[in-house]
Amino acid sequence: MAPPRRVCVTGGGGYIASWLVKLLLSRGYAVHATVRDPCDSKNAHLMQLDGAAENLRLFKADVLDSAALAAAVEGCEGVFHVASPVPADKIVDPESEVMVPAVKGTVNILEVCSSMKVQKAVVVSSTSSVHFNPSWPQGKPKDESCWSDKKVCAQHELWYCLAKTVAEETAWEYAEKNGLNVVTICPCIVFGPQLQPVVNTSSELLVYVLKGRS
Image (tube, rainbow, N blue to C red; front, side):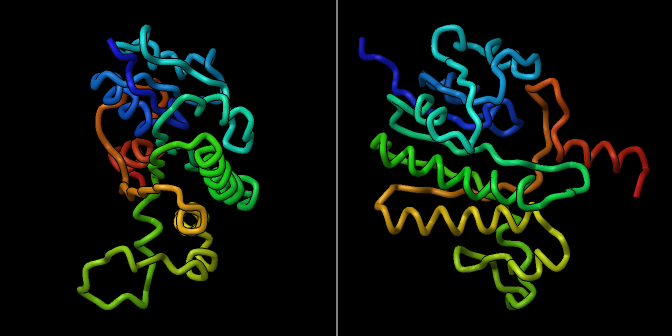
């Protein structure tokens, strides 16, 4: 029997990534998932997924550590780059807290994909990289040509939106320059059943609203 096809998922302990790991395992893939600390109890749910004992490996890796990312990507034919800071509290230092991890982290994983001859990289962006564009014509459907206005994001201190916009633009620029097969997807606010024990930022917003706060 041929060995299972192998893929890597960055930020494996998060909401979207956890469900992605579960889906990939259910489809017979061998999965390398990067997490900050494989021994942290907040990542324990991953090894409890069906098929995890046989086909899931957790790698300690930070998106700013190219060597650690390379170890996780080695042997993989595809990479899902999900890891990105989603701050819930007020941001004190936008550059170090959000911009560098989002943008430099994306560049790092794409460079690793190139060096490891990965067939395809799927970069999880966000609708926030599209939504904040006051000059877009009213009523016109937003498409691949629509980007959030970076100046508007910065003026309103929408640091997450700015980071996701710059990170996705950077991903496309890298793909075009280096011939890497890149796909981006732009999910919106994510709600639903959780696999991980820690409430994610989107769900915190929902809890906040349900408690009647404004």
